[in-house]
Length: 190
Image 1 (tube, rainbow, N blue to C red):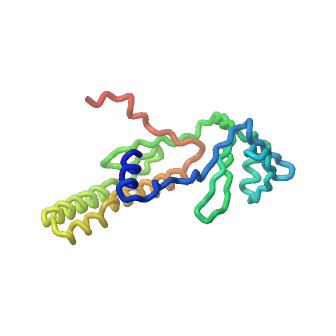
Image 2 (cartoon, helix red, strand yellow):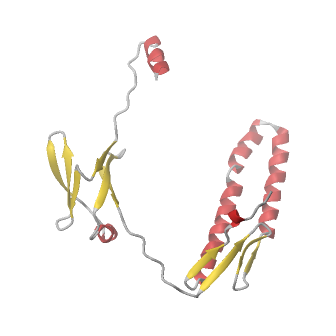
Image 3 (cartoon, rainbow, N blue to C red):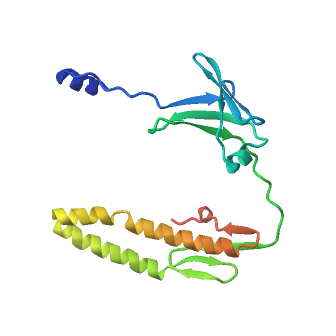
């Protein structure tokens, strides 16, 4: 911050400042009235009652819940939005014997207890190809090579994320009641 002031003084310009764009409210200075979909906020001029514009999803989420805090944010378009946090209880899991076990690995990405397997062979080939391309492009060191490296950065990770997401969706679609993952922390790897 001191360097900003020093630079501004040298250039004979005012110090740039930033206007706050959000205000945090806790349960003492913020309240929600479910029946008429309004909130009451404590401000410098006193308490203000504001109408909420909610969709059915938000109404369902707020129904019967007590908000714990809220953040009033001013977005770039000048609109004010309120982000309401609620405390919700986690449901207790029901007892069942219908469980799918999933073992995760590198050679086979996932193997279920139902006998299904997703091979990692294609992913290994893609990783090797990206490694070869990166190595050959890095050798050149030209401006175009650096642009290509920038374009390639993250592509391998996004590919892996997409594959993992598709596999997990397939496992969940076959899930009966519960999916159990192996806890690899219990193994002594070294």
